[in-house]
Amino acid sequence: VMDPILSEILVAIAFASLGAVIFTIVGLISGTDETATISPVTLIVVLLGAPPSAVFAFFIAAAMAKHVSHAIPTTLLGIPGDTMAIPLMREANLLRRLGVPHIALQKMVSSAVLAALIAVPVSVVCGVLLTPFGDAIKSAAPWIFLGATILIAYFSAGRFAAILLLVPFTMLIASLQSLTAAHGLKLSVSFFMGFAAGPLISDLIRLMSPNERQSMKQAEFRRVILAPDVKSWSGYFPNPLKVLDRSQIAWTSGAAAVTSTTFVFSPVALTVIIGEIVGARIKHAYHRLTSVASVRNGVTESTYIAETIIPLIAFGLPLSPVAVGPAWPLFNAPPRFTIDTATGEINNLHTMMNVWEFLGFGLVAVVVAALIAYPFAMRYAHRAASFVMHNISHESIVATFIALIVVISWWEGGIGGVMVMATVGVVGGFLNRIVGLSVGVQFMCFYMAVLTVPSLLKLFGAA
Amino acid sequence: MTSIQSDTAGSMALLGVGATETRDGNQSVARSASETANLVDLWGDTVNLRHLGISLAVSVPISLGTFLLFVDIFAGLVAQPQISRAYAMLAGLVACLVTGAISARLFKPKRVITEEASDPVWRASVLAELQNERGGVGEFSDLSEATIRELEALGLKDFFQNAESNRKEGVA
Image (cartoon, rainbow over all chains, first blue to last red; front, side, top):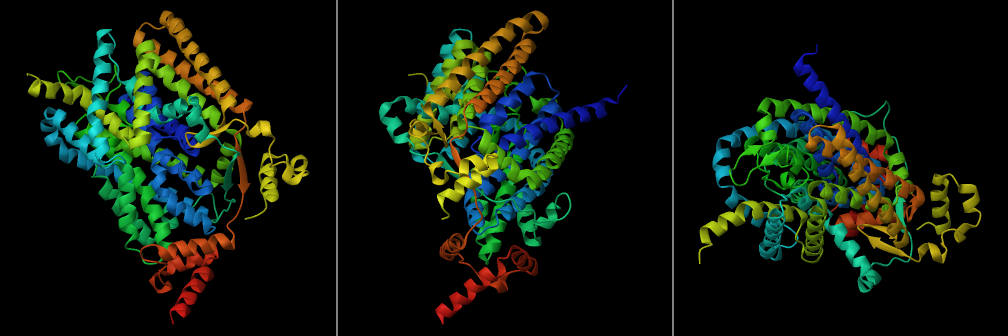
């Protein structure tokens, strides 16, 4: 008979390995948005009944591995691996044109490992410090979501347009909710799938309009330039602390620690801002490029880890851009994980795991993901990038993704789920493309629709 | 920019079909009209409209059908309805991946992949860009021993040193 604690750890290691392997591969495929890829697979892990600690380890390892391997298309092909890789593009491209893309890659993946190891303990401490305020925050949740959403909208591409659009978009969600509820359907996942797929769905609709199709026409195949393979170390793979120099270790660690506490801000915005702050303090351009690339990729890890762990420990409510995006199945995946908006009762990883478990399994996940994704990125980056570019057509990626969101929406609500997904996908996708109502803001609107709208109507509803 | 001919040779060599394809040189990069007729830019990459239509027409109904089939199958086998539906969703997900793999086999990517190192023109353009950014290129005296060794190992030390002396002469 195996010790139950040991067997729980082994199961968590197995799930972390699974998440790391899957998302090391997904990270190679450029343009695979985190919310669109990590959340549906995590949802399946949740619903199949994996133990809470294994669900948590799966997610952390998946997110970490993806932000290691997303550096491969970013540095070797000049195409952002995912949403978080967009702020890495400038440094990656300049280093590529200098002829040293392998240095950009090595620095980025080394700082990812370093930052993730720092982010887990710092964000656990931060979550513990915020726990005393948890109850106050939970009871004020409708207003906190309102404030946070306005803040996130202000910092999104749409600025004031995004803030104004909160009203109609939230009302659209609220009305779809009450329409489906009238037919006995309680939907959430279908909405989330629609938000995540919105940009693709709106592109597909544009394709069907003759006018828009003309503007999307291409005369030639897409040209992609792959950097040559260079191995610049001896042994199996280099020590991450030797890839970075002393000041880069210091900047990456400092940035990781700071961004492990600022959990309410957009991870993309933080990655940009921290890079600017560090860049302004480094005098030589070459050192600036490699340092900013290191620091920025470190921040892609620390923000993701902190924005997942802090709300899980302190609130159990998804009060961060990552928690309402890629990590939503850890908070709200009915029937297993639930947030009852009427009674305020929470039943998810927040109630199922204690602080030491978050710390321990978080570190286990980060170490497992590092052991899988780091050597892979160091040794096989070039071959993997070449294989994906030559063999994985964009048609197959689009078809797989559309089939996936249709299956998941149907799983949740039959044809009603699919229609809700399509409706919010089309509306959200066009609002995102035309005025910059970002996917993160759309997720926040969902929580405003279920939390803030009822409270507002209660307060000011009487004529 | 290197010639189109050698670009194609590079990408074809990677595909393992060098000998047959490079023979006709630049003929092979000028794709036939039928190959480029239906190309559109969608969600960040180039696709062929007809290929996309077929891929979707294969993936969506088969994946959804697999899910619904397994809902029925598992309903008889697994007592808890929530768990049995989750298993059916897993079957649906596998169908998504399998049909996606079929599309990938049927339709090749619409990309021309070139393997190319940086050339001096590229490097010079980087220098111009770095000079214009806040803080400029900076000076060697700002660098640590470790970074100078790194630049030397990469063959970039002379590049930055020459740039610095050229700039100083220009100022003087």
